[in-house]
Length: 358
Image (cartoon, rainbow, N blue to C red; front, side, top):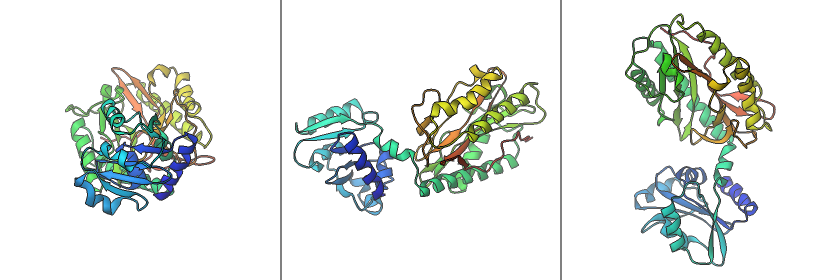
């Protein structure tokens, strides 16, 4: 992990910063290895300081990367920042996207006049977007675990079981296989409910002859997976359901085929969006094509029409086109891929053909 701090230091010079205050706990974990819930880190050319409270001193001793000096805060964590800074005037970057107004005000009160606070959101996140080989394998392991749990769920059938029952069963199956927790709240949505992209599982039973959208993921060793499959529960009652499924599958396959380093997020999004639009369903694909996945289930880079990101070797992103027809059904197919120079590697193992499960 020491290499991460070194790479961050190189970015500080580009941002005209003398040091960076890291308060987002996920970024603290990325830089230091600490898995607790209360800590901050200060990274600069002359010093690297990790601060936590008395509850985590022993845990930090076993987890925090040796390049960081470990300190225990006697009051609020932010109160220890001034003591950790070197002498002289300096520009101190802080994550303005993650720090509260109250915390910013407290920093201003505690820091000496020689310290200038400079908004510097995104510096660590941009490092996190490019995964190291060990991180990629951790995400792949989480995906494999989630796939196995999903296969076990399907073996028990869908029809007659409630959306909520299925969601809880899938989450329990992931935990039993070693997951720390789900990456996010599992989505199970049958029939017309599947037209809500972020549907909350209900106590309603899954019925024969409908499409069922299931979106789930596992967190393993801190890293997340994310996958969606849409299933059929027998011959489909809606005459358009199979055609829309084939459309979404074709759009996803085209987009996965278009992944490569150097391609910008908007351009890749358009590969799937244009195909869906040409079939007359463009207005029913209302979300982006994908997003980065790592220590968090949603992180950089974005793959959407509003993206300003360019794909890089080592990015792990979702490819998840969808079509949602209100009152009828929804279809979404999602896979995790690792970006390479001339293509990508799909991390999951589940087929994308329409599978029927009674």
